[in-house]
Image (cartoon, rainbow over all chains, first blue to last red; front, top):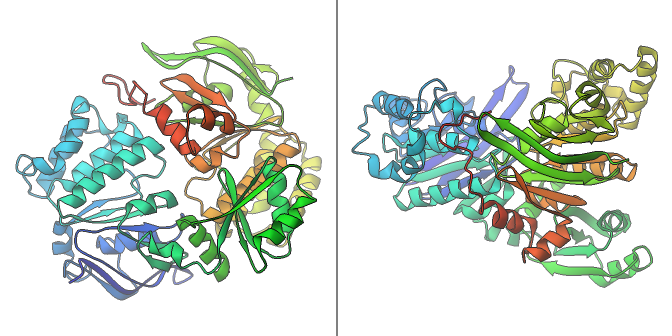
Length: 304
Length: 252
């Protein structure tokens, strides 16, 4: 049995004018880190809120460890740990008071479940008397995760836990998730950062309420139909414009130190010949292994 | 004239030094990336540069005005945009342009003409009377940037302008930054996307309130023997002594 399963979940807002989710179906295996990867407005929060039994779908169904978040919402709330996108602990309570509060609400015993949160709590301990509102962004996230774990949930639903957090703190947060996974907890996590996809076991790319692709972060890029080339030259902006002027260019996007190019037809040598007269100095053009972000943009353009 | 020149800029909160003697220049037309982990002092530094916070010590000029004595002039002569705060969703595109233009004292007659031109240039003419909340994100971003620079500032501060934005819109936004910098605008930008750091002419990385490194992305990668800026950033930020949660210190 799948730990999380959804069947054609649909949800609209504003009396049907805005479709947040359109027939979304996917499944998460037990003990998996499953990433929902997509930008703001893709439908990630709506999906997680339905699974957390906080809002109702218009149609379709879901199950978490066999329980339906609509019918069995009380059971679902006991087995999930939920971390909303907006920091929603009590800002006026201290770190310790927040933990005790959440433990009491779930009738959980902090001492019994201590091994699960020990890692996190060790980092929070120096600030245990500080009000939650006075913590930094990274520390707030750790406290929120801690509070979501006090009742030893089977499933963690994390809504953009790393948004706005710097790359180093983000990495620490992910290390923590990987350790929780090792304890058998199933984790559904959403993120707008494409580079976090590789840290998940499986991912779904989501955009405008629909799932574009599901699979492992390694297999999804192999589904691209055209090879991807990395192009670089002395003047990168000039190069970008020149590649886009080439009639056989399918797409050309900036990718940090290089531009990623896909061609409609023809060989990369044809492109180099075209660029020869337009770009001063040498141009490097090499075929590369595409990444998740390449796939995401490819799917976005082929749909519009 | 430099767009920014600061020397030994320092800001203390009680006995905590958030920004510790930083000195740097930004040239006109430069795209300057300002990076740092949470708590490194980025926001405090940026607030001083924008005339929103007085330095404890140090001196400098932004857009030609003294940051200790002329904070009001600085505010009038810079542009500012962030992902979190940009335009009003309950106003139309035209109303947003007129409102912000008014804030910057652009005379109304001139503003009327300019706003129509801006709407035309962005291809938003037919949608000018739609509420902004009904706009696609890409259009909003474009409009927010154009509105931030409609009073023709010498420099624009972009505070995480692309957080949470889809990958295509994010890149279109950078195309716009490039284009404006070619036209002579100075761009001061913070971001958590390390690929975007590669698009800057120069990058400054703050660690523990000080400038840990400042150079072109190429030179930084060479110096820190890294494949990309993400690696450079990690190597430097891992060396941080100060956590954003020093006991006894509240977040600003």
